[in-house]
Amino acid sequence: MPLFKKSIKLLKFLVRNRSEEAVVCPEIEKLTNPVSIKSQCLKPYSDIPGPRPIPILGNTWRLLPVIGQYDISDVAKLSTLFYQEYGKIVKLSGLVGRPDLLFVYDADEIEKVYRREGPTPFRPSMPCLVKYKSEVRKDFFGREGGVVGVHGEPWKTFRTKVQKPILQLHTVRKYVEPIEAVTNDFIQRMTEMQDDNGEMPDDFDNEIHKWALECIGRVSLDVRLGCLDSNLSPDSEALKIIEAAKYALRNIAILELRFPFWRYLPTSLWTRYVKNMDYFVEICMKHIDAAMERLKMKTVKSEKDLSLVERILASEPDSKTACILALDLILVGIDTISMAVCSILYQLATRPEQQEKLYQELKRVLPDKNAPLTSEKLNQMVFLKAFVKEVFSHWKITFSSEIYPGFQGVNWDLIAAANLPLSKLYHIYFREWIIFPYAYQKSSG
Image 1 (cartoon, rainbow, N blue to C red):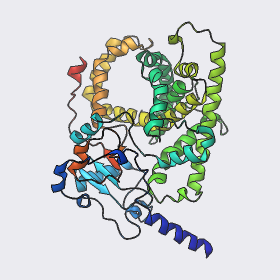
Image 2: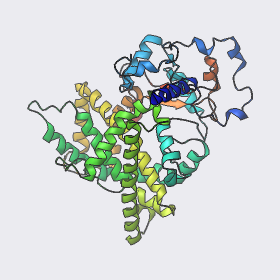
Image 3: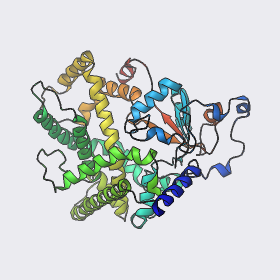
Image 4: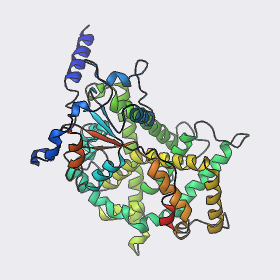
């Protein structure tokens, strides 16, 4: 009975505070009359269409298993349903433990927002990762929160430390051959997995996740993790990394959007999440420390001789910076890279004419299929680059981008367009319902 009473008390607390969980943007206090005066004659925020919340449970019940209306594990389907039913702007309000979510599907308005983004964007996303970094493992992260789940000046400070080696073109070129080696192993793995009809298994996306994880490990940790090995032992490091990554990918949406009991009680889902995150930190520190030892023994003639990890270690006295960067790359890179590859392969598979055109380009640029791929040869693949750009313009690698209408440089025209309150959190969801026209091919040529 006492436990039941505590649960009821906690539920009441969550419901009472469901719209107050967003972190308050520090820029709001500095703003004076930011919204255009023309917004005074527009419809109020409450008129924005969307699922209607019920008393006490709001809209959170719609995301619950069994009784819920939506499957939160399939965010793409959820986004599509909202667009089809409500139009270009949709509000999901009454979420226990979260502020309202606003879904914007207008490409023109989305462009305006991104073109006015300031140097310190405020994006209070991934609350479970924020809690892990700022509370659970504050002893490790301290003030170095990284670039994921962090915003404002701390985000800018960390990004400034790592952006130069990451964004330089010669750094990207340095990894063409290493990534090709990983991909060749992946192709070999694909041939082993084919059935009698030459088709991949239904869970082929899991294999793409492994390939993405192997690529990220090669870049961010200077090591091959071994995720593509066909016979991994149950206690192997590679299999543990794969299982931890799978768990994160499958459960992050549940932690983020269902009842957030984990904020107040150590639920089994939260406990497992923390355990997985601890393992990622352990693996990252292990390989970063090894890279540090190799760097001490290495004779360096030029900065170009250094890998990405080595360049960061050479410029930052604390190896923790490289570790936190590697962790962030793993956390956000697996899903985004996998989604990108899945989208490209699917669009290519469903367009045999373009597939043949790409094949002819590959034969021209790489007449010897065993010849190594170089950045120079990649630059000659005009159609390939156009195809990839076209896929990304219509089928995004992420489903949403959160914005808070108080970050520096926000597009107040967009906020005023719907008379939106400053205390809400908005999601921009990409969805462009147009035909594949190859708009980039001419510019690529």
